Length: 221
Image (cartoon, rainbow, N blue to C red; front, side):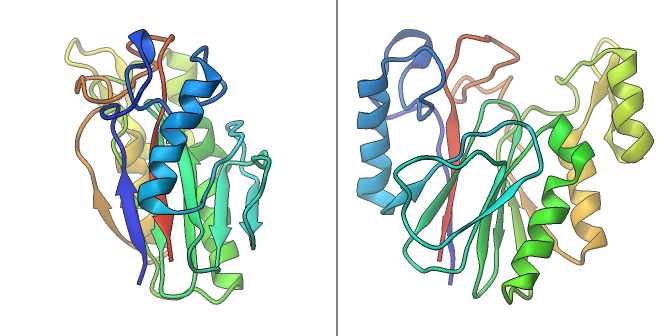
């Protein structure tokens, strides 16, 4: 049995733009305060492994707790008791659960294009996962994620269901809808958190304010 959880920005110690449960060390928040926030996570969810996320498609298999965060955009483990974390502030926190293996995946626009979710599913199956279910956390919605024509064409050429429009009729991308289509190709069922990180003030949103924190998607066996 796996456990999944999505945090919001509430209930931590950070102040100002990072108020209050910012879990990212790479933003301009006070690092000691971020570590206090992470201690809250560990108190409630146990030993937690974070990533140095780079919008790539590298997948790291975790067999023990690490002192340093690996540089990758997906974490996979078959070890019970280790919580995997993905940090986001508009990108999709994708949690993949099965009886024997779990994964936390960072899926933004570039992650969708470079197939990070597919690579993670393949790695999970190599480790013995079957009947994988997907949990898509809060992210920016297809009405809010406005993009330029070049970006739109680049993504839609590979993922037609990503095509969307803003309320003003300008080009936009619906990453959750496109990701669901990818997961369906691999026979995964999906549950989706429909809350938009840009519209909902309870979430950090980089599109709304570039000086902001990060919430997390958490999963463990």
